[in-house]
Amino acid sequence: MAIVLAIVTRQVYLSLGGGVWLGWTILNGWNPLSGLAAAIDGCVAVLADAGNARMLLFMLVIGGLIATVEASGGVRGFVADLERREWVNSPRPVRLLTFLVGVVIFIESTITILVCGAIGRPLADRYRVSREKLAYLIDSTSAPVCILIPLNAWGAYVLGILALPEMNVADPLGTFVASIPYNFYAWGALILAGMVALTGWNLGPMTRADARTRSGELLWPGATPMVDPDVIAPPVETTIPPRAANMLIPIGVMVLMMPASLLITGGGDMRAGSGSTSVLWAVLAGLAVAWIMLLIQRAFTVNGLTKLAIHGAGGLVGLALLMLLALALAAVANKLGTGAYIANLTAGTMPPVVFLPVIFLVAAVAGFCTGTSWGTFAIMLPIAVPAAISLDLPPAPFIAAALSGGVFGDHASPISDTSVVSSMAAATDHIDHVRTQLPYALLAAGVATVGFAIVGAVM
Picture 1 (cartoon, rainbow, N blue to C red):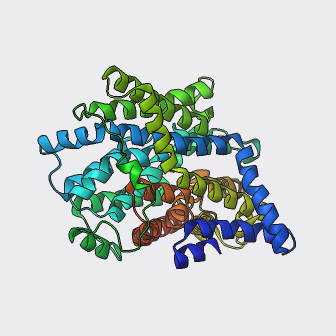
Picture 2: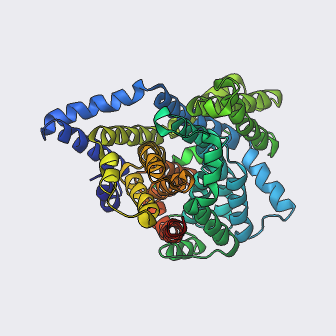
Picture 3: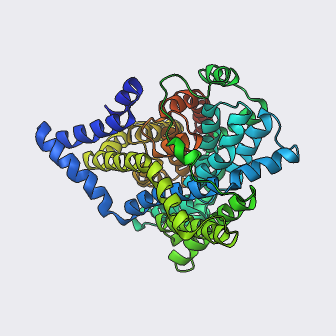
């Protein structure tokens, strides 16, 4: 219901809310009134989880950071420096810069997305790169890069699952590292995004989006960008000259604070760190440094900075609401046993030679239906790894198939939190982003399916 409504009505809030209501209606004996009451309680229960609450608070704080950096002239200074050095003077360098930033900043997907958006969006608008293509490049570098790195928030999460006693994995880190070469969707999505960045290749509806942008229209008529325009161009600005340092230093501190926070929260073990805590600490550190720099430069008073941060946070309240509804939908899907049911439909019904591509496709369906790659990992890894061990096969390709499928399903889903944040970072309509990204995701998924079939045949 959520997916169909999102595609047909283009109303993401209504779609997610409808999905949450229907899920709880099913759980309450198909009584719609009881389902509505339970759905409200389910949304409230999302906030009871400390990790969820931290992620929602992170969304508000990042809004404050975006508004502060923009008002400080940091983005304008960075863009001016690039153009003065003639490093960016046409659409291709804009695409390549966005791609490279997405690859280099691999600490956490949300940070990657927002940094890419802050840097790429003003350049994309100036040199007429469609916001849909910008959102695609952001989305197709963030999660694929993060899932290929063991020692970041994504790696810590996966290693935590692999280290569970029931998984029977003797060396979780070594096994995860061994799975990286087999993560065909992540590699395929990255290579394809790199080709698009280099050549500007358009596939499917991206052709029309690029043509519209070249004609001078940033969005389709009636499109709703996934961010308050006031966050992009806050009404409060400073009189100091634009300086790239006002953007680069706070963002650099934010990025470096992420692994440091993982070490601190993990008691010296980055793999055991809290991803949600580390993300929140990192963005708070970036905001604090931005404030200190602007106070030293006498650009704003404390009162002005406070108003600016609150203004920016207000611009992302809609995104925080979307995250709340997406988390509530994932929670009710988990209570219904949706992912486990889909996964168990195929358990033990096929020979090993086709098991890998089936794990990939089932994980993709689970990711598409739940809109979360992390939730899919939690569902699929405890099924895929014991299956490999019971078949006396190496677990690394099975881990890769589950991870690849989760990332693909997340990329293709209109209710995905990662895709929602990518739409926000590029300031584009969310459904337009999903529609234009889907052909590229399907192409990479087709290549991945063939790759897993080949590996399964030779194991």
